[in-house]
Length: 469
Image (cartoon, rainbow, N blue to C red; front, side):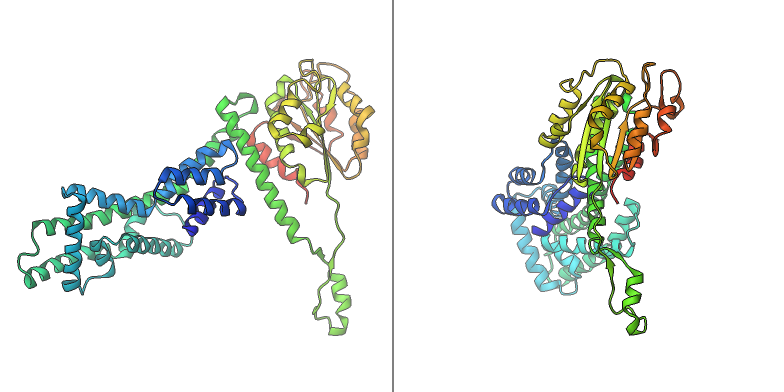
């Protein structure tokens, strides 16, 4: 059971559900209490220990039904179907199986292990043999996918299903010769139905394994459907899926950066120092030297336009910034429309939804006024320029539509002179920049990077530039 729970947790992680080692251990303990007899209690135990976010519940339910309606359950269902087809009660079926086992002990010496386990109704052995054959077959394919029908046929051949029919005929003839009358009509029916059941078990097992892989493929397909759709035109359902995707993107980047930092903890390889200190060894680098100078974690300042025209894009960007706060030594977040206000304390002290509501609700600034980028930038330089230094990356998210007010682009120049870099993400199509009341071309002159960021796929491409190296 422990191994199955480990595999299930890996399946959950592969489909975007975060399951820590501690939570896996909790699940193992809970499963030990509930056992497997009561399926719903077992499901509830895993749900309580493995799922933290409401958005992950549908994925958990789907994966649970797929994984724990596994090979053992398929074999069990095949047994029940066979008993029903032979019109036997549970007691009659068990008596028939006992008679079959005695016949096999006396007359089944030449049977293969697969045929013997099948006729004995040895569920555990059958499950092990099918799973091992499937694992060896996938290993032989070197991870290459194969069409479901062909994989089922290959698995049947690997198990020796093509020889089963001949083995059963020989068994029937041998018993009839050695024990006339024992191979009656019910005996013949049982042999034939067992052979058919094995074929059905293999096909259902392959279909189940395909379904496990397709959960992730279906999710990826759904995200691809909305990946190029503008933030402006998302439905309520798509907004929820987008929120989940942004959270998973943030988590994935955290993992990548954590690995990157772990690999560089010992510093960069110092080839000059290594060669110099190994001259006494004839230049053979018996001892390696690394540059152990520590790099400071960068700082980030986010200026986010939260006017009605970019509200959806603002929410996703602020959500991402909230998720990545621990990657930087300091994150300071500001929202603006015509005036600017700091939301850093809300992001630091509140959970995600509370922080976003505070930033977008109008409690910090008037979010219903007309956009005035110039006025907001001038207020930032006047009151908050001390937040920017040589280690700071400044990120501006906005459409640069200034309602024909003074742009005060000199403010961006001053910010750029103090910052490490200045990045502008615009949720409008690039083809509209500079037209009408857009000041994008004027502001872009003072930025290190200007990118269109109006959908999820563009956000994916931009985000890696924001992550510390």
